[in-house]
Image (cartoon, rainbow over all chains, first blue to last red; front, side, top):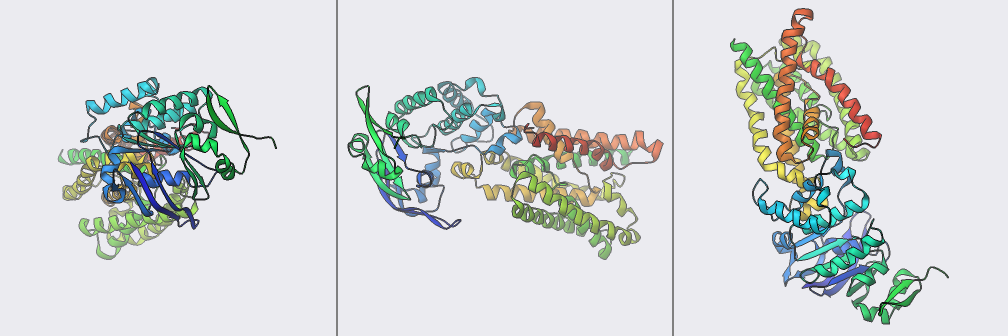
Length: 256
Length: 280
């Protein structure tokens, strides 16, 4: 589905190589988690797959090198990071953001019935339908996070890249998101980057562990739990294995 | 009669054009504090107008060309200074004020010499429709064509640009190209208005804000036409006020001054709410 070969990304400012030759394949119809410490290259990897960065090497989606299929990619793939805070200075409402997010699939100058139906469908699922006509500046950070996720879903993509979607969500919100992403993954390929390892183990089947722009591990969740050295090495923190509802997860051990 | 009709048409059309350029500039720079006046476009265009009049006399064609060039040069200068400071919305205001001060100073200086060749030059300082001659009609059509072409091309793209440059890129809107096109259209259109009628600030700033306040959205497909109508009403009323109410008392006060009288306090309120954390 998504196949990456010797991917390198350079940032001219401040002159670093954020991804240093990464090769991996991400399974279709699954939730993949990209984890790793700060500045390990998680966001860069997601943005590269979304075609938002210049890169060396190759990224194939459905066997097509994405460089040559950007227009196609825009229709089937969504990336959600954050909404520029300046959007609310000009009085943007939630529905304005969602309409703009449908740009690649929306036809013509005016909104069609399909545009509005799709927006209402997605906002009903994300429980933000009552917020559609509110200004972004009036939303709580948790509500705003739901809007960001909705903005990625309104064009009905097949591939969903979410950069830290669990930010600003409380425990109940994270639990809901975890279940929702798993339900979505029946029809979608989802790649999530997160700082919350516990959230990752609850949500994802496939893991990519990054450290300083290199891959430490990529593979299925259960294999990672068996060999926890990788994740300990990435975070330079001891982890312990705990059992919850018959499932094993790794949690960081803050005590030394 | 014909003069009055022309004057009404000119002031309304100029108001509409300036309001739309305000929408383009605010959305493309993602900055609610700017219009052609704040960004220095107006004073740059005025200075180039004076310089051209000084050398070649008042010929609408050459003057319009020079004003367009002056407007774009001063806009470029503002952008360069603002990006050097920090690129924030306030940096744009500061950079715009410094560019405006520079060109206004130069214009005042030029005015002494220009008035000899073109006695009406001082009218352009504050923006007035007292010189509503039929000959300038074709020149007024140029900005009208620019903004009318810009609206369908840019309105939806500017909505996407509001989500941030990276998001816009992913959605298939080239942020640099969109910003460049908006700035060019707004810069050229407002500069030509300046060389025809003079410096009229704040219409481009206020009209989009009132529009956003009235219909509570940032959707440029609706905000641009509504701003145009509001700009039309505002500038026409200002000019009407100037020639009916003010003229018998004090002699005619330029419409531009009347707009500034209301616009400047509005701008101050805008700045204050921006800095006390309340979003306008």
